[in-house]
Image (cartoon, rainbow over all chains, first blue to last red; front, side, top):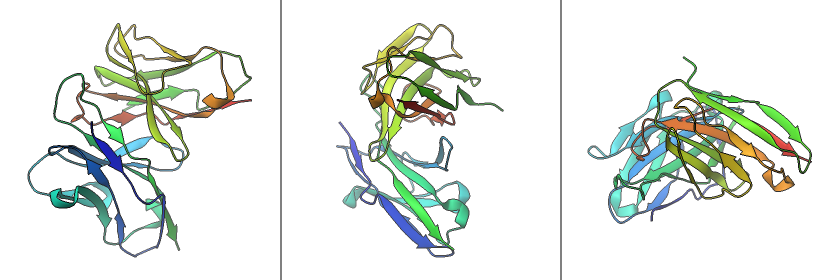
Amino acid sequence: AQSVTQPDIHITVSEGASLELRCNYSYGATPYLFWYVQSPGQGLQLLLKYFSGDTLVQGIKGFEAEFKRSQSSFNLRKPSVHWSDAAEYFCAVGTPRRNRDDKIIFGKGTRLHILP
Amino acid sequence: NAGVTQTPKFQVLKTGQSMTLQCAQDMNHEYMSWYRQDPGMGLRLIHYSVGAGITDQGEVPNGYNVSRSTTEDFPLRLLSAAPSQTSVYFCASSYSRYSGNTIYFGEGSWLTVV
């Protein structure tokens, strides 16, 4: 079975600074990888996903993530954060099994705080 | 462009009361699910459905009941509310059960059991 870890519960950055949120996974092959964002009082929304191919994935709202097989990581980055990026971010891992064992597992989330 | 709609948004229940959280989606999605979100625990799957008439248990099903009589609707019933069920509940849907599909979430239902 797969697992996913987000090592940072809270991250604080200044507006305009760069951002990197960490995500590590465990799975025996190349998994499906996702980042979702949850704005305050809202449901989760997909930011980006990786299935295969180019390891640098572009998403919505100026976010990108890089799949690094050697490090079992899928870190989320943004070059310059805006106050509206304050939210909780969830990394998720799925599998290409396409059977009853196929399921998506969410990390416990990283809450991003933005300093003005 | 409704997507996934959940009601109510907020609810306070007394211990032992029952209630139903409503969920509807207008995307003709086959797969629907309910999660609960608790601080430090992330999202945990309660129940899911792969189509009308088919439901199954997730990670934390105890104390909850579901049914799927139509493709659009997937209500979650709390049979006898307990303080441990105080949580934020999210309904979600996707095209199929396979994890490669994008999951669409409702806006959440904040439930407090006193």
